[in-house]
Length: 249
Image (cartoon, helix red, strand yellow):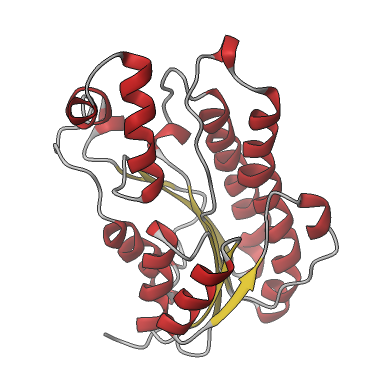
């Protein structure tokens, strides 16, 4: 693979597993030095060793601790996230706030911390791992859907402000990706909808998709890798669906 990210420094949140780890591996293959940010210390250090990078063990839901950060990174991937499935009238308010801290406030604070370095260098890439749920809604996911919609807005503002400084900002919008987060949802969805777990993928997760399979983390990472290159310099402010046709409806 071409070393088109050689000399770049990337930070991937939630980088110890799933989409984050796949992105970290993609950037490392392209020559970037990657920092894995994750709250799981053992997993973060293992992933960092795997990609020849660094580990940052951090609870990104503690947003107050991020207000004074300064980040010298060229590529920022906002990927960390969690999911909780429940009807609105039963939804725990603290869980709602937690998801918004982790998936909206933290990306804002990390972008805020990274932009001065990016502006000084005249180059930067902000890649936000959003979701088809950043463009569409589903029942029982009020916190996740609203957080991803907010992330879409954040990304577009960063694109407008960053453009004159050589900084791009985009969202990748995958459908259901085969990750630990989605595997956990299967049991929750089965309970809420009253169907067996083996029917959840077909009847709930893929019902709107023309391509009847889950997205692979490596597919998302391949797009993130391209967005981080010079070839993607005019791609900014976009929401790039990778959902098998879900949002085409």
